[in-house]
Length: 116
Image (cartoon, rainbow, N blue to C red; front, side):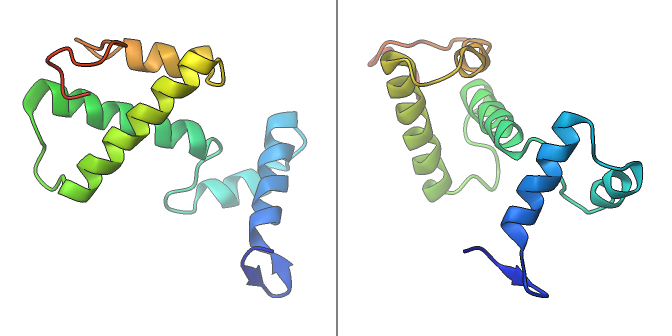
């Protein structure tokens, strides 16, 4: 069970609102209310993936951006390893592969003078 707010499981509630939005049955008022929340996203998983790909692209182009901690760099490396494994085993979508392949200098092979 997720976080409870006034007796409502907030995670379930959000999942249902996103589902209603995708099906086109969410009221305009509810859509506007949710979109007014800072950081709100209809597609948080996709948004996170695109942000990660962008961070990797910046890293490969310019080196570690200011504020990129060793822990975050480690997490990025683990994320890349997982995506490569998912692609190899057919578990990742074509969108994931396309996002990674859009990075200049991206390679699927290991040990090719690239950070990832």
